[in-house]
Amino acid sequence: MAADTDPALRELEQAVREIQERVRARHPQGDRGSFGLSLAPLLPLLHARDAAEAKVAAIGTVNPRPPGLKNNLIQKWKRFVARVLDWHVREQVEFNRAQMNCVQATLEVLNDHNRALESIAAAIGECQARIDHVLGASISSLNDRAAELADIAKHWHEWRQEWERKLAINETQFLRSVADLQSGFSHRSTQMESNFREIAKSQHADFEGALARENAGIQKRLWADLDRIRTEYETIIYSELRSVRQKAFAAATLPPVPAPAQESHPYDFLRFAERYRGPEQYVRKNFESYLDYFAGKTRVIDLGCGRGEMLELLREKGLPAKGIDGDAESVAICKSKGLDAEVADLFEWLRAQPDGAFEVLFCSQVIEHLPPLELPQFIRDCAAKLETGGVLILETPNPECLAIFATHFYLDPTHQRPVPPVLAAFHMEEAGLGRIEVKRLSPAIESMPSLASLPADFREAFFGCLDYAIVGRKL
Image (cartoon, rainbow, N blue to C red; front, side, top):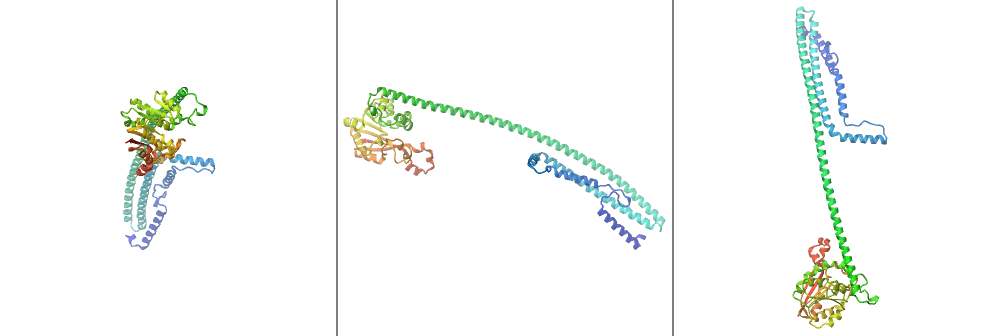
């Protein structure tokens, strides 16, 4: 063909192709294609896509406002609301982005179609140019070219119709997919909202139930505390009334004495004993550990009988016993209970008794009140009044327990000096008593639980028992 052999024609064709490529690269989606071919205008769709992407990117942001305290508070509130609603709009944002991806894919397909149309138009233009160049050379070849061009145009029109049909189908499917996604999102959003309401309702019911149970527990503890406080107050009132009755009875039974000798103690001894020695029931319970020494005995003396706890305990067991105390008020209280008690000085009373007259001499919390140099004589007097095999029981604070120096011993202002168990045993041996045994009483850890933090061996050595009892038998 002439176009293939003519250098000028080839050069012209090359120039036309370069111009077409430059135009296509610069304006890939113009309103009019090459050689008058109509192309689909995609720029408005591109602008719409960019605007939609800007809107998608703006979801969840807060519009700016002029500066100021009020506007700052409004901005903070808007940002807080945006963060709170993030879970609600997250699915919508993802759906919008998926939709924009679909639009982007459609644009790329349309752009490819436009480029294909431009390629076809370029081919048609090339054919038309060749026909124009060879028109004068051969009418037959022109007719052939025209027929070929007509055939190409026919096929192109058919292809375009098919392409438009497929494009309509794709658009329909796309819109249907968008509608399905929208309905699915709406259904899921409604379902999530319903689940959220059910969860909130269940949590609210659980909270109300827990609140009701806690309220019932608080009321139960309150009534228990009130009942305990009432019991404690009734106990205190009963103890005080009993002390008042005992004092009234003692005042009525004691012979009138001069005012300076009216009271043996410079303080209310009964109130002091009730508070710091302990209630009578507590003291009697502690005395039960001595009952084995009194079994079958009939000549028993309680030296320093006080309120008569041991005398009452022995009377309950059917054992006769007598109490001696230097405090007239204490003896009067014992007599008010129907107990055998006598007011006397312990040393003078013991010296007035015949030797070997008694089976058991019991002395609780007394020897620590005696001057240290009088203690050996007191033990010798007790030993002298016991029969052979008789038992002397002395109970006193235990100085081996360091805790008594911080609490119990110096609480009583009439205490002289603590008596160590070794010293008491020595005095008993000197007085002719044997088979001496020491019983440690009232473990300190029971009244001071903090001692449990100390090592066991150290606690036993220095914080063992608050009291001890030493028992000796006359040989």
